Length: 190
Image (cartoon, rainbow, N blue to C red; front, side, top):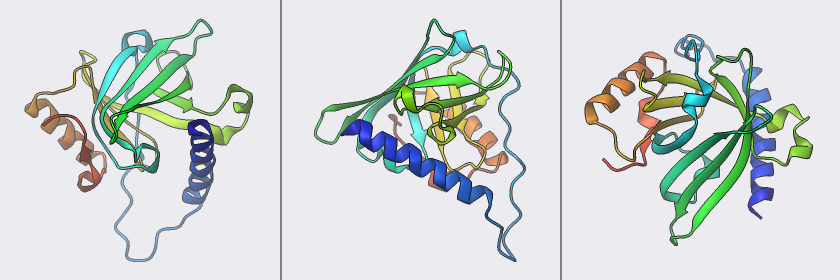
């Protein structure tokens, strides 16, 4: 059942992506923020490991998640990344989604694509979603991940809690990048 839901999600994201790219801003709308950029360079092996979700923009595919959200990344022998996302549901059960990520561009690129659809569907472009590292501290302890349209945003950390000052500085940088922080939901402990 979960795999069917993930496949439906990926199909929906692909359709939304195409519709969003062809949309035209209405007259009188505020100017669109500048294009979103990924960080200049990402050391993928150093990025591997466990990341705890601290905050996110709400999204329907995590609607059942009520806590203990985390992502585990590990390098595969084929150069891709295994992604395991877990969270606790309201009933206390753990929910898990296993996917694959691939780097787009050079080996230092911070632009990745991730899919949770079965491997046999990987030839379809819409099953891959953008996963851009848009902010990362030098110690690889606090990260912000999004995609070019700013519809999704995750703040992740190596520990379940982050220092308030570090979090506040990250939020200030995200606001400068054109994110609507009013949409952000804190999911980790305050």
